[in-house]
Length: 289
Image (cartoon, rainbow, N blue to C red):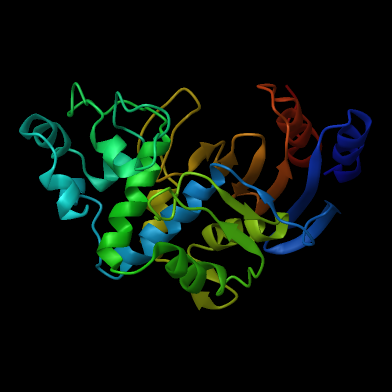
């Protein structure tokens, strides 16, 4: 492992990387930059934290993978739907949302009532389980989970995930009507995101505390829906022989259980290049393109 080579690439090429952590067998072995002092946008990495919240509720029997979405959402919204819309949406289960396998949904909700907008969307073929990356899927999961729990999801995440992991500094964003957004709008430190990775790498346990079942972690981090990136679990991406938590401007936590490695970095690089990833793979994982 050539950690210094990775950092040299970051500095020489002036990539906007805030901080990096590398763990081996649960122990921090390398760090660079600001890993604890400040919190940064993690964008879609928020979805993986939502998945963990769903898993905790699932483990407690409060929500099911096969539960129909329309049976969980606020009744007043369902009552306002047309018969045709209800017929389309009744086939959508929580698993369909968690795996991003609802075709036709737009990328994000709009307006001042995200739930009204989302349920107005047409699903031409409700039975089509095609990968379709949409923030609406994550947002609706959060709304359904809020209803199933009977409490504010942000507070649930705070008390059931962040506090047990020792994550003290963070921000949680909401939709216009007040739900935990779930798809994005969350801020965290590099070390905070590493702790999320450590929880999943250790099969739902963190420093002797059981937070999530091994069954849920196994399912959430395995391939449930194929896509061109190699596969998707429950708001978690497949990566090589492990998995990854991803945000849109290269916010990453890579978990490689066979190697005992976790690599986390928060960045803000607004392009479609894979240069940072390739440098990490070359210097940290010893993989050359």
